[in-house]
Length: 220
Length: 231
Image (cartoon, rainbow over all chains, first blue to last red; front, side, top):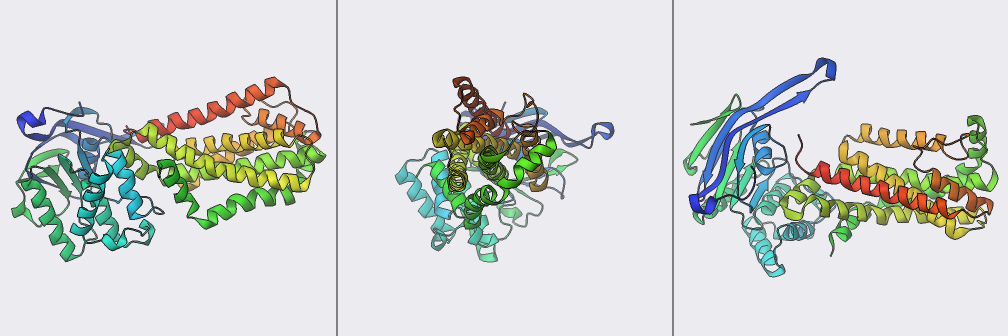
């Protein structure tokens, strides 16, 4: 099952249980099946900031995409709230649209009314300090500013669960520190946050850390 | 602003794309139509004179619309999927993306039709205009369908061109009897008739409408499926 759950009753923002996922590759006469997730399980509760680490190719982004619903899982169970924010590893944006148009499209997708959308957008622009780029097209932005927009779109509707896949790649040091302050503020407000990274230097900020190893999540 | 308007604006911000949308159909009709009858003769077809010029307008609109549909769907695929998952839903994103592409296909069809009118005096201009637009919409659907499945630019564009070549070479005027899978045959029949100054029977119009709507519906369905979870 994937979808709205009894998270409000249990405090669970995300429950992933025994998820399996394999990819097929090669032509039919030389078919190979590569198992990436072999029973991965983890939990994130409301107000928790949880890390998921693992080597390159360990399956972190695959697990994230399964949780979000971009990839179908082969087995297991995912329970997550309806109001979900997802910040993908690569900014998935339209190069010829402006920052303002991105906010507009996502505000509609999240079904925010105009006033709430505007307030939320302005708050995020100020928080991440890229208000002056509102009228710029994505193709005109630096990598770091694109990443700010990528993150801001995931936060626009104040999700119950925030999934961040390598969220600070491309950030300068100041923005990196601001990112952690933002994450901690939202955790304090009750948001459940899962951060996926190959390198988590700020371990003291995290409630707990899982390591994805050989397709399974192990608590560190 | 509607989602369709935002997506259309995205494409219109590529001035080179817009220039190609107008220039390719116009140049093709004006400069290449003359050789089509020779080409048809080599393939065993009977296309000649004004009929070949008229058909060239349909092909030109089809070719540019197919390429446009493919690159629209393929280049925005990941961002469109993210938007669909964010809560907009795949059907709404598909409808907006295809509607935005239709606006641009209309531009290409208009350029092809205007070039046709400048080149020859078409006896049934309204018939010709509708048939050229149908060519554009049919290949827009082919492009979107391919772009929803294949995102690699080389493979995807080659597949669109391959479908176009098969269809064009097997279509009316180019071969003895068009096979049933030649998707543009009804549009071609109407366009050739318009060029020759004869009308088309009602049955041809009904078939053209069915094929065009069916193609767009197929593109919509494939887009929606591809915007959902991948296996």
